Amino acid sequence: MAPMIRTIAMPGDTNPAGDIFGGWLMAQMDLAAGNAAARRARGRCATVNVEGMTFHRPVHVGDEVSLYARILSVGRTSLRIQVEAWRRERHSDLRERVTEAAFTFVALDETGRPRPVPAEGS
View 1 (cartoon, rainbow, N blue to C red):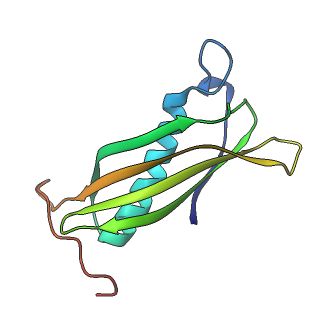
View 2: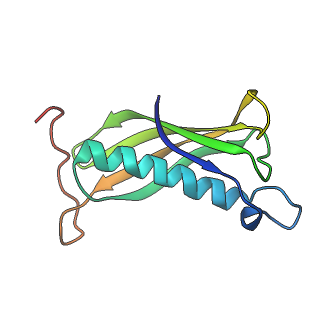
């Protein structure tokens, strides 16, 4: 999997229990998948589906969060991208996988309508 984003979980990203809010982590994953989709489709893409998100471990304030993505499949106008989120404690080298999910994107033209994904290498 290719690295897409690395960020630090901050206090403003917490839920009422003090853990990092799952919605924040999902947004980071969507950004990572969107980056991979836009690069492969060479243009604007929109998220249309997220499947299989399970949170294995919590993320804490100060943790470094790394997002990795790989393209699972490319259709005529869509791309399916697997994203994994990993955490590293601020003062440690120990890394743990936090969650993963498959994101589906549709390539869009300048009017917001679906467009074909270019062939790889063209």
